[in-house]
Amino acid sequence: MALDKRGTKNERKYEKDSELQFKISVRRNKLLGLWAAGRMGLDGAAAESYAKEVVAADFEEVGDEDVIRKIAKDFADKGVTASTDEIRRELGRAELTATDQMEAEQAAGS
Picture 1 (cartoon, helix red, strand yellow):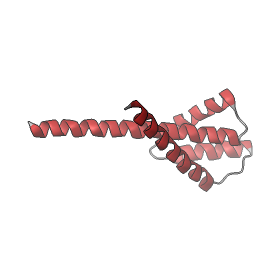
Picture 2 (cartoon, helix red, strand yellow; picture 1 turned 180 degrees about the vertical axis):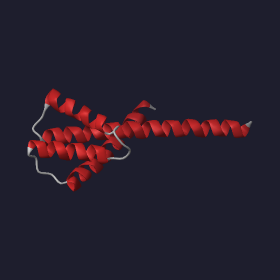
Picture 3 (cartoon, rainbow, N blue to C red; picture 1 turned 30 degrees about the horizontal axis):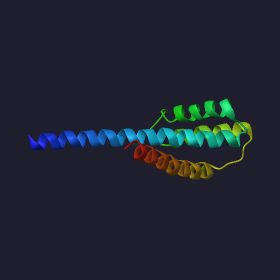
Picture 4 (cartoon, helix red, strand yellow; picture 1 turned 90 degrees about the vertical axis):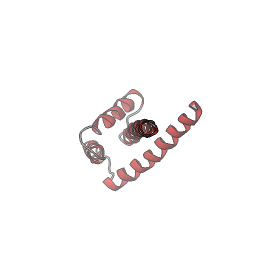
């Protein structure tokens, strides 16, 4: 009986952690999309729309390459000079920011 309770508790923790990681990933991609939009001269509703496209691009395949490819292609199409390394660095910064924001929101909600 105690083993069943512990197993259920671990499953709930895993689900909660997985959900949090998904939310961080979505937030990260939105932040990255807003950065890229700014680099392409988009603002306001156009920037928000582009950020949503970046979030959607992440569902094409596992990992970050789909997002990086999308932004690199869009930059090339718009004549924006940026290496994939620069995009990856910004992705890392966006990840840290998204994690900090989600942790702060969870702490405020506790």
